[in-house]
Image 1 (spheres, rainbow, N blue to C red):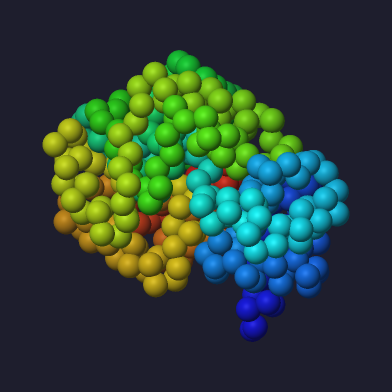
Image 2 (cartoon, helix red, strand yellow; image 1 turned 45 degrees about the horizontal axis):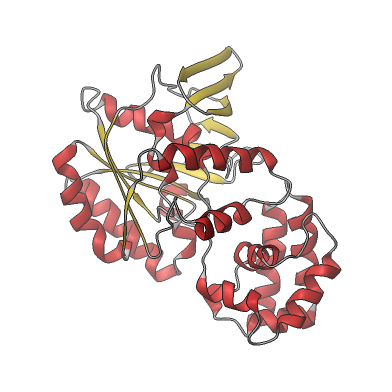
Length: 331
């Protein structure tokens, strides 16, 4: 398949993934059929052609969303080879910090804690962005099940519809330490970084925007320790460092998708090796195509709208909505 066809297919696929954003669904589908816009995108480095990144950069520079595709098209084609949209695309990366995913991660944290006599966990997030997902102990969780709601915690609320035999915890995880690594960490006290995080939230998702603002307040009260670095080279050292504070949990959510195929395999092997050595536990939350070795262990196909696979120590334990809205635990 030629690159132009691959790029069109990437935007068609994103249109399907963004089904709960009418704007992004329409825009991405239109881009896939627009030869001129595809030609403009093809002038970007391959890693910078991602729909989420390009659409966010366009919105940051004034393209209205919700709004017509014509406005996006006009802005991209007028941007040329040295415009502000291109500059933002080249400078920034997709670093969505969706704390709603904590509602799907918390049961996995509880399983790990139970294996260590409920000791406080030493969290280490790879691709941490601004580190907002390092505070699972600072939220109120409402898990809605067929048998009624399970509510634990205190703080901003996170709600999730749950099916299957999920081991929902009776209290929030206890956290001994919070660390993160990212190629370009974002600063919760920086207005520019915060504006970028808000722009990455999809246009119609006002609930996610409000949740992000609440999460930023949580993090500003106790800023996270997120270092700049490459997860493939720095992870072993950081795991060793984190072990001084308690049982280590390496976590990531919608991050490994931004590595190339070779890097994904290398990360999979690295994480499995650390788990096999007893150095850490591994909680992964990625689209089903990203870590096929984990997806292959799922005991049943994912229900509709459960696009992510939740993994624990390299084994699939649940299917989850990409933004944490739903969780289906595997038997």
